[in-house]
Length: 164
Image 1 (spheres, rainbow, N blue to C red):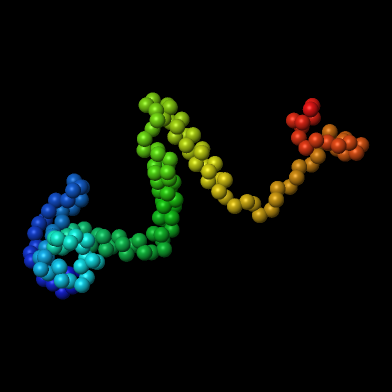
Image 2 (cartoon, rainbow, N blue to C red; image 1 turned 135 degrees about the vertical axis):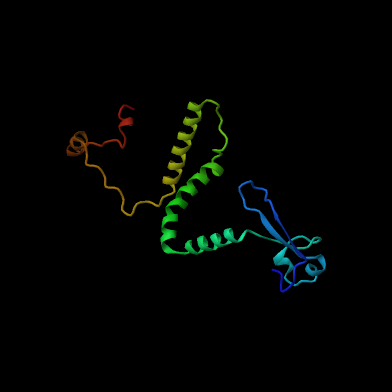
């Protein structure tokens, strides 16, 4: 924030580090303007140099303002809600499970790694869900269990323990 200061000069347009980004025009402020300024900490973090403020071309700035205004509408937020869920999943895979690097070279093995990781993430997500409101209903007794109950014979809790 220049705080009413007049820039020492306008320079540019300068190319940016990205080949697809628009060039910026820079307004430079001197050290003598920046050092005594009370808003310096909000403006720049460097202790030695002066502030340089970059401005995109007017067409790009107008486009940014129009898009930012559109992003405040409820319709845009509803459309983006779907996308943000997908982006969250992709981010979880890339950063949480290391899917940017694969353990295998062959495409088939890499595919298996991706599928198994997706299954693990789904299981992890399902295990984090809150329990259902009502307890699951117990199953009806089988014919054999009914037979044992009628004769008041004890039955084991699992079929695996019958032979022991």
